[in-house]
Image: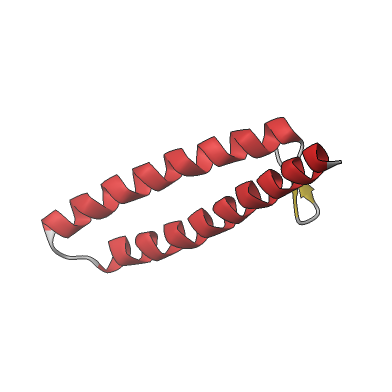
Length: 75
């Protein structure tokens, strides 16, 4: 029973991480669109790439666990 609860807790953490990353990506993309300084543009590009890698990692983990996001099965 505790193992099932631990898996559910881990699944919730993964889904929450996905939600958080989606919000962060949206904010960084908006900042990128508004940026005019080359250094800031470069930093936003690196940040977007890093967030996309995290997003891919957590999506893969969610898929492996058979998690669903809302009504949509992941993967």
